[in-house]
Length: 463
Image (cartoon, rainbow, N blue to C red; front, side, top):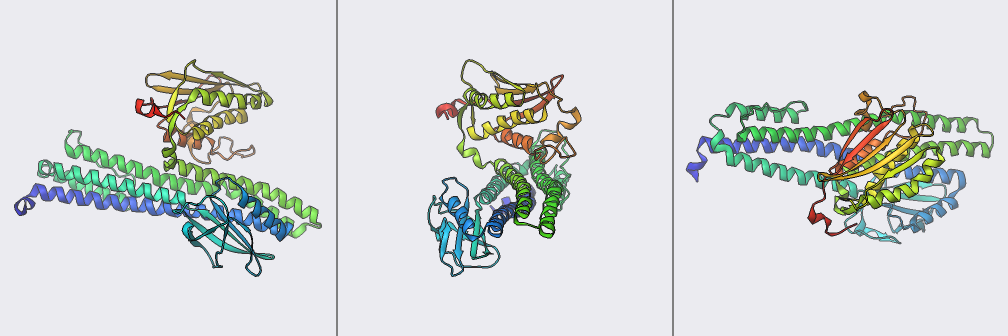
């Protein structure tokens, strides 16, 4: 063993494995920290939005009205992922779905196992970000589950483990054959990984296209770096888009509230201003909720719910619901479905949201008398869903951009929408292994989604 370890090839293999592991670990560490920070901020923003809404009710309608709202939310059977506790000035329980939480300052993580549940299902492994807020006649605790954050963290750590294991195994097995003639390539790999960890995200390992082990390692490393770069760019782009796209509605919201504070001469006038502001606030909250949903989908947390799902039944149900909606808008919704069932492995709820988003986009952005056609095509490669219309379409140079979060063709932002519909479509399609393609319908737009063929082992449990 000692003689083997002294050989240059083995030492080169060990060195290569160490370099790859440490630099990939550093790169993923950056991603881990940035994604964790981003998701923590989004969870806290959701808590603040819920809290501010209840504080506004307390300011306008009083403590009793807040109590009724909290009781209603606490009694809801919806899986809201939120904990609520309202106490009076003496600390006595008034309403909520938890009890017995002592007062504390700033933010704190509360474990589900330590909570006294008043109602709702208990998940012993869950935990919540929470904070207290004073009200006119007591205090309010609002918390939100961080389960999605834990899923992202475990996904990153699990992916890191398997990537490191694969890279180390490959480097060790092939080191004896490649060490003598590949020292230059090894140094290049080390430099690229170190540069990537240092923030130079465009650097990649130059391939020699010789087909040997080092060339395959270079390809795998570049693929991993491509994946990590996309994750970083998604976080950066999301942060920039959020700051840019929500600056205007946040400014309008502040202006309305400031005008109400300074100029309102009666309670009714003040309430009217606050109601308008709440509509603006709801739009902002919906945008954040959609962004969080996209992040959850991209993390792959819903894959455990995948079952064999019949696209024909799903599209038939959508047609029954949205054909009257299209007719009310002056449009026509036409379905072309095969006679037999067509299955994919997926989440029926997410797939329905995907197709509904496409129909609603066509209704919203096309003029009256538009024909919206949805076709289900089954082939040996897998099923495809084609949604087409004869509206204005999308210019060819804009088709890639419309999948970016918060991107909208209509720059004035005068029409409803957040620019997240097609981003959500792309995220759901990618989660299901599908590919989305846009093309010209002359006139209008064609959106084609190709799904992978359902394996026989996946068809055992229809959904």
